[in-house]
Picture 1 (cartoon, helix red, strand yellow):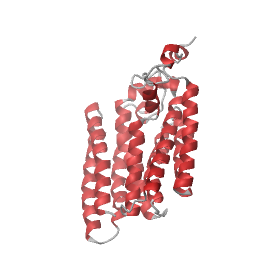
Picture 2: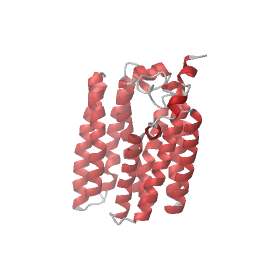
Picture 3: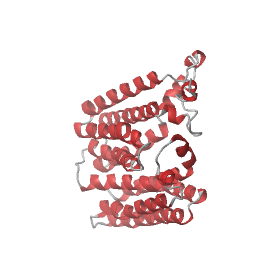
Picture 4: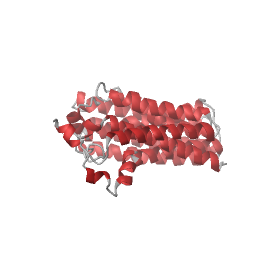
Length: 302
């Protein structure tokens, strides 16, 4: 019997463990799911100007959250044997043997079905189809591409950028230039963010056979260049909501430009140095940039 098969065996004593609920929560990757919901809330705020409909907000957050949980759980199901080869993922419920693969698969199918239905019935078809597109790209395209080509990052960034547009359309916004601007900021932000992660986790990714940019080009030059390019393109993308000429939009434009230039500087430092320290700096910058941009956008860009 192979090592992977042994790792994935489920001891009967662990199946009835009281930590089962915690394992299902972990299966949903709560930090990623919460981040997607935060971006959806920002998009809805911009569309409604905080004129919330409690039922629509509830259906949007629950539906989008279930779709995200489904995508993450099915990603873990499909990658369970590869997760067992990486230090940072070996203790996840499936590779650690605390959950049967069939349970994760059923959980993933059930949550996508319920989440999509909630968005259709409680929000609108546009939001539901955007959510389904994000789910499909993550599960059926991004996940298998990770072992085939570095272009997986491009597909994953599309999937990750759609929740803010879902919030926008859930609040009644149209698929217009504003929706495009919101999408582009989230899409481009993911390049510096993920290139920092790809550098810090490059040994794990190599051990699992993932074709990340830092694995296929281990000097980090390509990852650094992509981080700088993504950050630089953020500047015009982030200014799209400031096309208007009133004072609040001008304030937003100035603040967004300053934040973006600082983010680009962190990406440039990573490109020049290409070490763990510069990668951690870029990762921190990315984690500061996104909430700062959303706050400024909601305060001055709406």
